[in-house]
Length: 259
Figure 1 (cartoon, rainbow, N blue to C red):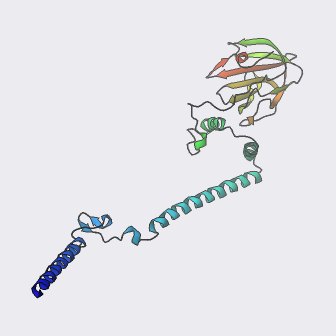
Figure 2 (figure 1 turned 60 degrees about the vertical axis):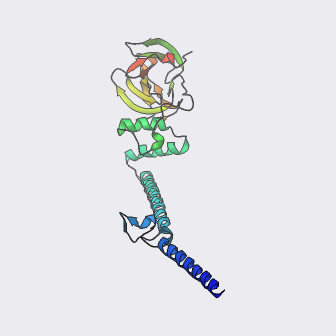
Figure 3 (figure 1 turned 30 degrees about the vertical axis):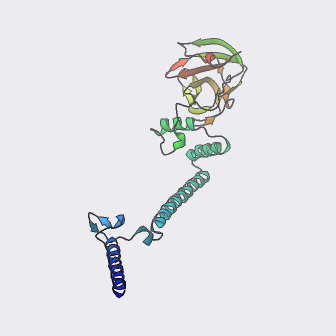
């Protein structure tokens, strides 16, 4: 009986020895190492991620703080420039003031602004993604066209004359036929005092033989906004009106009703 118990104890001790040796080999450095400690078979000595609490979170927090500080700085610069523009008495600043006021009181036309930027600055305003146009999608809203002055068409469109002639009352008001940028306002050979407006669809309207001009170059105008008054030509109150598209003049009657 004593030999039987001695044999059982011996087998138990042998099993415990084998279990301890297996546990020791599993936990040894040669059998397995975490990924973050391996580098070409050699240890880097880098701590495990959970032994570096908050390190990656701190980096993300710093990036967010950097973006926020940049936005605050940019907003401060923009506000400062706007303030200086409205405090300045320089003639050039008056145009900027008019532009800023117009932007603040109406829905901004990004398509028109992008064309102005390309004409006066050059290139595409990529720093302002909202200015980029997606040509696969039509622009929202339909462009409004109105007659530039009340009167009668006495000379229809002629390709050689590049426009039509409207007889009006003395000093009749001349208004913008549609929304757009004033790209020219002054004297032109053969047309005298003239206003040229570029519209958001690429067309241009020309208003010639004016007696007075009420807008200036780079102004943004809306449909029916006053441009000036009809002048006197050969004893009559006549308005020259032309429409240009892609470097050639077209018949305005195809777009505007002159009933």
